[in-house]
Structure formats: C-alpha cells, structure tokens
Image (cartoon, rainbow, N blue to C red; front, side, top):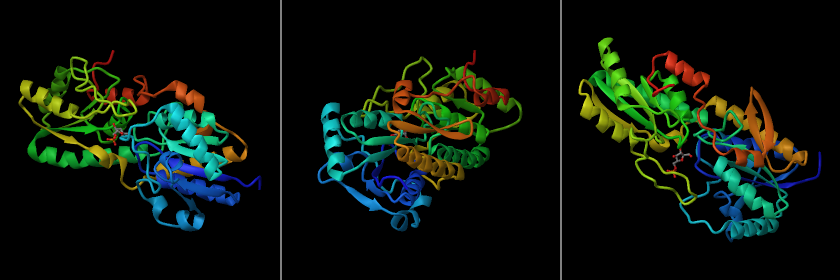
Length: 360
Ligand code: F6P
C-alpha cells in the first residue's frame, strides 16, 4: 500500500446513467488502498462555494447501498444555469477549496466541457487530477465510449420500439428528436438499433425531398408507417440553426427541429400523417445498461491506479477494447468528436436503405 491519500470525486455537467457506478468503483478501489474519499457535492461548487459541501464515502455507506445501480448522480452535478465568475477567480477559489479540504487528488467525472474547466482550475493548484469521461452525446474526444452513452442509446431504441406500434396503428410517419448536441452518435446508434427509416445527423446535410422520397419508397413497398430519427443539432434545409441560443458556458441549446421537419414534410407530401416526439431528458436516465456499468468499473479502477502511480492531468479512455489514459491537455485540444461519416455505422445505415442525408 502506497502513501495514504485523501481524494475528492465529483460529477460535472449534464447527468447520465452510470455515474453512481463510477463513484462506487472509485470508492471500492481507493478504499482498498486505505485512502479517504470525499464525495464533492454539485460539481466543483462543493469545492468553490463556502461552506464546502461534501461527504465522506466508504464502501459501507455507498458501494454497499442500492445507489451504484441507479441513474442520476448521488453527488449532484454542476448547474450550468448559474453565471460563472472569471476563470482566474474560479481557479483561485478552487485552489483555496482544495487546500482547505486537504485533498491530494480529484477524480472528475465529466464531459469535454467539464474536463476543460476543471483542468484549467487545477492549473493554480498542486492537486492531482484524473478525468473519467461521461456523456450521452459520446462526443468526448479520443475515447471511443463515455459512460452513459449506451444507456441513452437503449432509452432511444426503446422509444423507437414504442413509436413503431402506434405508427403502425395510425399509418403515420413519426419523427423522434433525440439529444446529442452537435454530434450524431446518439441518433445514428439508436436509428440502427431501432431500424429507423430515416436518420438525420448534424454531420450530413439532407433535403426535405430526400426524406419524402424515402417515405414514397416505403409507401410503394406496401408499408404504411415510418420512423424518422432526428438529431437535435441538425440545421434547417437552408443550412441554418433554428436558434442561436447558448447556455452560460457557451454551449448551443437546441430543440424544435423535429417540429420544423414535421411542418415541412406535411406541407409537401400528405400520404402519411406526420407527428413528432421530442424525447428529452429521459435519455439521461433509465437503468444503467451492462456496458455502462462495466465501463464505470473499469474506468474507476484505472483512475485510482493512475493516481496511485502519481499520474496527473490524465483522462481514462476506452480504445480498441482496452482501457488506457491520455493527457487532459490532448483531450482539451481535440475538442468535440463528431460522428465519422466514413464509419461502419454510417456505411451500414446507408447500405440498409436508411435515408441519412445527401451522401457524397
Ligand atoms: O450534453 C448532454 C445534453 O443532454 C445534450 O445532449 C443536450 O443538448 C443538453 O445536455 C441538454 O442540456 P440541459 O440539461 O441543460 O437541457
């Protein structure tokens, strides 16, 4: 057993399924080393705000509870709706909080935005940092999978299955708008799993006529219903976003593109009645699927291994079936990972006859 450490763990950014399984894995692995684990409440707020808000987590009070199997974040997450102070001011408050709490290391469970914010905060402090990627958008760079993505795909696929029954009863074309921000991973994976007829993602331009042609083909084949999966981040046919709204950390806020498509399709083609479902935040919840829990366990164990080895400013990643780590600076530099339009997912969708936009 190496030197005893006091580590903090926090969840930051939009929640997703599997966060509690990550916390549990970190608690298990760190406890085995005899370390103390401070569960920081509400993202970095638990450190930067006064009084500091945290609780001591142990195998007994956390990992042995039902929480690791549940959605949401036991610790709470950072509320991005609150205006943030300047980076310099926040970094100073963060460094002071870390000192006051006596933390040697912090495990940050977050997406690309959180990794960026926390790695900047940590520049003014000597605390060791390891990141664990989580997001339903699966757009954290370098890693192939972030915790929460597979459960979100499952939630979307279950919704497609439900919509299929009612589409069939009413001879309708049903549009389902899913999250994912500027990346089409969630839409494409769930469209493939749910055998959708159309899948529109921000990475591939489309035309309304292209969608209508696919609907006509379906009609001509004798089928009377269709499922259209739409990523919230796609643009209108003329290439603009419906709104330029941003949240307080500068991320785009989307919503409503499904209704736009419904209006456009209905005004040009009336062989199918068209309706819209906006799936919303159910995508961030649901029972965490096995893959997310497995990933949570592997990532949690690896994060503790890295801290024990004295590593700093790293993020754990999943690549080619293995867990590894990269420098946080590399993650920050790489930005957001969009859907690769040359990937096997996109290729398969095309080969299966799904309309996925105007492929070159
Ligand atoms: O980044 C995760 C995510 O769920 C996006 O897919 C979505 O656009 C956004 O967060 C929604 O954020 P909020 O919870 O602030 O509505």
